[in-house]
Length: 109
Ligand SMILES: [Zn+2]
Image (cartoon, rainbow, N blue to C red; front, side, top):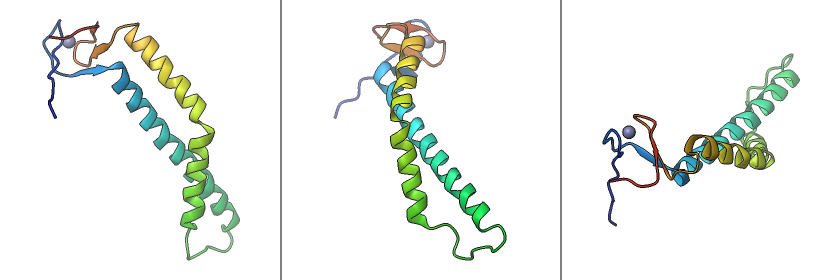
């Protein structure tokens, strides 16, 4: 595997992110956010149901996992829309964004 080092044409930084990489980061963050929402929702429901009689067993792990996965599935269109917005507004048609100086560029050196 060869690694190509990219450098910003303006500041020379090696901290460049491509459109595809940024989209991947947004999707991963969207998945984690969906999991967290689903888990919080189940935890709140369980907390209300067991507020008078605390369950020592805690939350059923499978139910919590399924709620997280369901939330991820339900939010996939909004995550894709958010990803497209990030690419459109941050890259403005360019391929790379320098995370140091903010320059957008189609090629690197
Ligand atoms: Zn730069």
